[in-house]
Image (cartoon, rainbow, N blue to C red):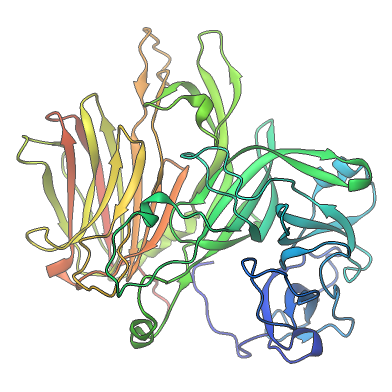
Length: 531
């Protein structure tokens, strides 16, 4: 999953038929129903009429449908099915805001909710209903004929611009893209999730309020979110996923996440697009590329035991967290969507040019009110990984790292955990001096929990969990992960590369020595040994 090579036939599917003359848009793999069938199948959005957008109603009828492509040589070449289009367009009787991005899956949970014993797959097509709300349209697909998509109904009923929590959940927008329904299990706990790309017109405050230069481009308003809930049969209306909890899948500009089940490991793997809208197009052309795929991630059902309380928020206000159980001592077990990099990314450390570094002893900061940071390492590559474990005590205000900095820190990118605000922020404002670059911050809510000691030596005290940070740099890309439940991918256009702009320093503010960097490791020169 780490090393990709360009196929002999590229692009694999191109517009040209009557039903896709204006575009081949997002698609998905169709899971095989017969292991003896060696023909690979993908479903894709077949666009025959552009332009369309949720913000310019009415959406043109049947502007996009669904088509299937087949491969009999392991994916090296693809042929469009002679039975295309599978769907000519959106369901009849509806005025939609969008209809695209198919996702096909097996789902025992949907079987149960619909009361079906038929051998079927399920298809989702993302979009929304004009003046009603965003949704994803559910189809049943008989395994005997994956070209036969039978409309069930909208899977979700939420209002326009639905936002259960101003802080802890994203805005669910007006129109959805790339929805994935997944079942995640941890022991005896099983939950249903929907991964959503939400288009809308309500921007995050830290992006909207940033005063950027006039020449700098603005971003498309959209966000990558998730929701979980119960699937309930709705009679003649099919089945509904009723919202219970939700949050951000990623807190940066990352978007269009699509997932698949890795049958060998049982992991749910997510690939997502990291768009590049913070630089003018002429700069992107000069650079030679625009946008990329983020590192592959695993999503899973995360269980957090022994929780007494968060740092400051009320647990009942934190939309991403379900209180699964409460113990007699008042401690709680929480469930939420977990997210982490796939374990295979550690293979990047094996590159022959990669150098490993670890601090010899823990570092406590701030040393004084005037000395709040400590130089850690100077990277020589643009591809590196940092892993750190930080313990925080009362009096700490902020803690984090200055990255890609010069000798006097006038050029730097800051990764900041603000304790009182319960946020992780990537401050890009000093990353370069260019006035044509949008350097708005990227940020999201994050807290630590006071928990019962895991050792079992319960003397009535609770301990604050440690902050575990993992940061990946790859050229302009920066990805941040925290405690298996926070992810933020963004673009950082550093002033320069190499040792003059390769500094990594730890910092903290607040009362003296209230942040302890127990471990910091850096792998400088990540890559592969493939030719």
